Length: 216
Image 1 (cartoon, helix red, strand yellow):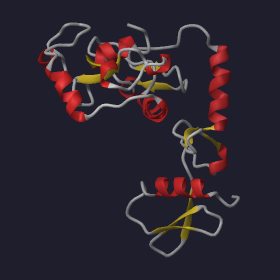
Image 2 (cartoon, one colour):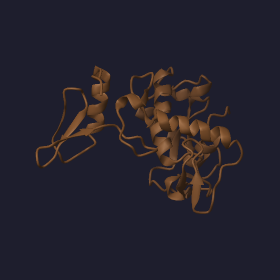
Image 3 (cartoon, helix red, strand yellow):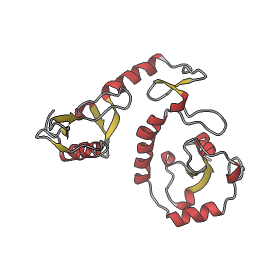
Image 4 (tube, one colour):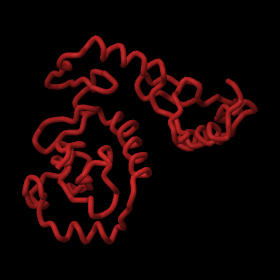
């Protein structure tokens, strides 16, 4: 592995911090090493969340914020090929679904289920590794901001979801156990909306998912 830049070294350190219980340090090339109980060094490399393979940092595409995507380039190429050959309806069964983003055929427990009984199109891992990071980048680039107090005051002014009109306490909680109330940008960030409180409304997680990036 070639010598890593400062940003790449920082990334490997972050990844390595998720490996607990063993001493760790960077070797001379910048690859991460884990010291085993016998004093032997084991090289640690980022793992692609799709193929589950440990690969060198060069196998991942660098983002504009200097971080790296969690899916390796080989898997990205494979996904694009699969998408070109599967332009129709994705294959789903009662117990399995196909993630439209990574194109894996997974058990339904790997997808978030809405209160209506339907599932998100992307699996939980793609939501965490792709959409959450993309959304954070959009928020960081959007104008405006709001405080926790402003959000709390906004929620207090709404006793029910403005979209489906169900009272908050009558909405079944999501499988993750988190709150049913989510932040929605009235004019989506992808359409030029701001992150100011004037462009924020509370929606239940189900309505927020259905709305997506549609205009009001």
